[in-house]
Amino acid sequence: MSTSDRVELRLTLLNAAIFAVVLTTFAVCVFAVVVDRLNQDTKSDLRQLADAVIASIDFDEDLSRNPASAKPDLIASAMPDSSAKLLNTLKLQWFNYNGKLDVEKGSFFIGSDLRTEEGFQLQKQPRGMIFTKPVSDGGKLLGYVRVAQPLDKLDRTVADLTLGLVLGTVAALFVSGAGVFLIVRQSILPLRRNMQLLRQFTCDASHELRSPITAIRSNSNVALKYAAGMRAGDKEKFEMIDNAGSQMQRLVEGLLVLSQADKPLYQSSPVNLHDVVQEAYRNVAPLAKLKDIDISLDISLDLQVLICPDDLRRIVTNLLENAVRYSDAGGKVIVRTETAKGYVVIKVEDTGVGIATEDLDKVFDRFWRADKTRTNHSDGQGLGLAITKALVQRHGGSISLKSEIGKGSTLTVFLRSAPVAQPLS
Ligand SMILES: Nc1ncnc2c1ncn2[C@@H]1O[C@H](COP(=O)(O)OP(=O)(O)OP(=O)(O)O)[C@@H](O)[C@H]1O
Ligand SMILES: [Mg+2]
Image (cartoon, rainbow, N blue to C red; front, side, top):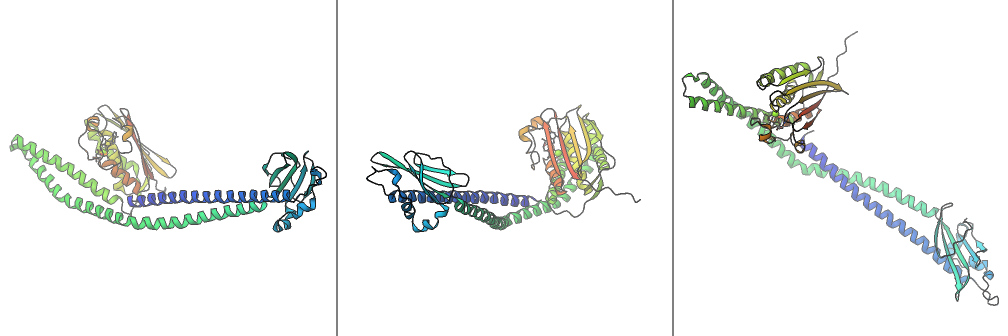
């Protein structure tokens, strides 16, 4: 995946996540408001019904406002027309001042326990809303009106609302996700174009710089070959030119590889890891010997990696070179290989200077180098690990780093293993 692909994916996911949060918050708010409104309406209906029932009760004056004289027929006729039709689904009850049920209408079942204070109750089975209101006259308690209504209709409305909101949110998420994807794709086009131009420029410039640098180096090499008749100062100058030329050559080659690492891959073939590690070892061995660093190889003979041979060579050499370069005299470097779930694992461990925890995520950045006073190395461009990571990712692998300052580092690379050819039986 190229850098611009990664930026595009990250922006799309970020925008989609923001949309998801906004839409979900909106849906939850709509749900809360509508359900609250429905509950309020139910309560207000019940309150009105209770008031209508109370207003309709005809008390017998002669019986000193005897609550027992409440007339059931009037209770029924007190209901509004629309509610009267629903009598079967409601419940109206009159309790006397002792809490004894005197009269009731409607078929909705509610428990017999009477709450004596005014208020609403939620009944679980069957689900319903109950409203109780004490009735008194001149401070004298006459009885209680209790009205109740099943909540199945309200529950159905809430279920429909939930379904509508969930489906609506999901549909809106899909539509907004597609929109976000298109917008991000459009807005990232200039970035893609600029990156492509930059890559092309880096590639062309590195390519063009190779010949003059090679010319400088070959001339300085020739001059150094015949340094016998030269003044000491001149020889030193030619050595400096050669040194600088060598650094520039590495830098230019590094930039060339990096500029091409994002390009789609055309050829990868099974490459024997053992052979490549041996080759890298031979390249690094002189430096290791010079620094008195012991390199040991613990590698299987038959592991095959699916990769371009040059890329694998660069990956292993960079890791091994770093392990030797950032270790002090007497240090140890171990290269191990193993397999894990379709991948070949290459581990390069050293007992070198290590990397500070806060720098661990910077080491793969281009041109990043640790503090010179700590690593004690001034050569190097800070491109090796950036190139290694780009090449590893180009071949569908991954790289990780563990390090402790003063103790050493372990770089682990996962690369796709090539399927082993089965012998013909
Ligand atoms: N094995 C290691 N132990 C300690 N520090 C390391 C190790 N490998 C890398 N580093 C640190 O990470 C930095 C970046 O490494 P990288 O290989 O990218 O560049 P470099 O070695 O400085 O130069 P070059 O481009 O020649 O490889 C190094 O400068 C060094 O500070
Ligand atoms: Mg390096």
